[in-house]
Length: 96
Image (spheres, rainbow, N blue to C red):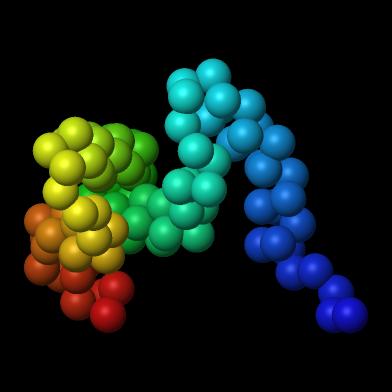
């Protein structure tokens, strides 16, 4: 068995809180893609400004909720791509 990475250890520490937060809001914790969220917020933080990272995650969440409410499929990668396309051109180049 290979040793756990720092990322795996962090996600294990966060799992309890994610489960409690989802239970409090009536959400499925399996729907929380921590890695994708962290990647998105990192891209926004470096592309715009750090305080905009949680705002960007919230905007992405609103988009997901709207699609689900409309009964439409959710393509998270496509939504992330659309959101990241709003970043200043220089930051998109740096992220590639």
